[in-house]
Length: 94
Image 1 (tube, rainbow, N blue to C red):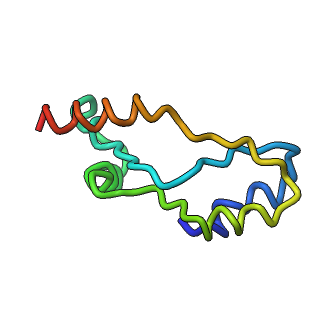
Image 2: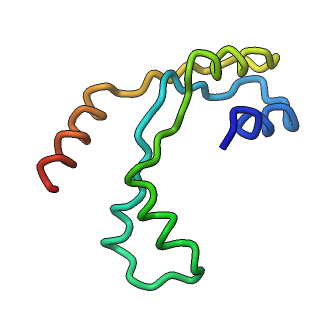
């Protein structure tokens, strides 16, 4: 998803405040494959499998572009410790 597509709801709805995630993040939905064996749509399984290699890109240029709106950013730096543990647990269970 492009930064323009991600910013579209802000442009349309013009909220006073919106979340602004700082930096890029791993975004893996593939563990859901262990929970669900049947899918309603043909695209669902490949989409979840593909999330092993998916990164939510949020570069300094993306953040600067988002700051062009008049919406006040609610800066979210996340919980670094949680991300580190999540990565360690993922590596251990592979």
